[in-house]
Amino acid sequence: MMKATIWHNPRCSKSRETLAILQAVPGLEVAIVEYLKSPPSREKLASLFERAGMTPRDGLRKAQDGAKALKDASDDAILDAMVADPILIERPLVETDKGVRLGRPPELVREIL
Image 1: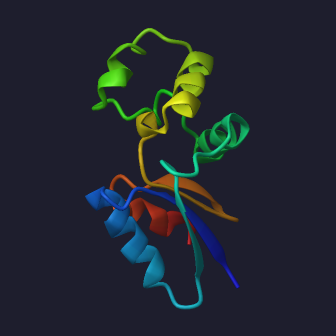
Image 2: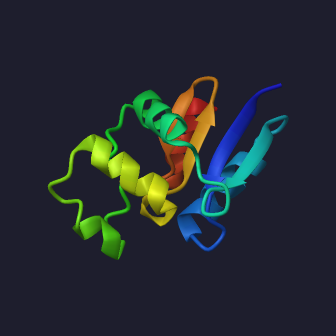
Image 3: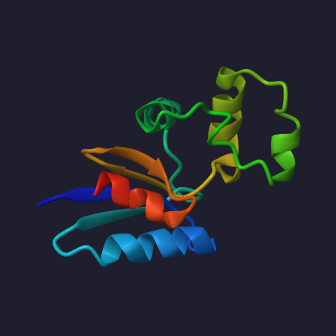
């Protein structure tokens, strides 16, 4: 059975749309992690971005107030900020055995299903 993990924010429409795509796949076991309540470790976050082919800056939720202070920051500093304040993590991130995608737009997750 194929498994997917979604780092989810139920208040985010893109996150909800991505979750609906995952839940519509027959036989897919979906683990939902509300990352604001259970944030990934720094190592897990770095691994997710690496597997997605993204930099931490690519995964930064630039619309958040705290992101503006990071415009000249290093990837390490951005990761540290995300761990300290998970709202800075762009969502939703989805991980399967085939890779990691940021669900923006939500249809991108189909690439790893």
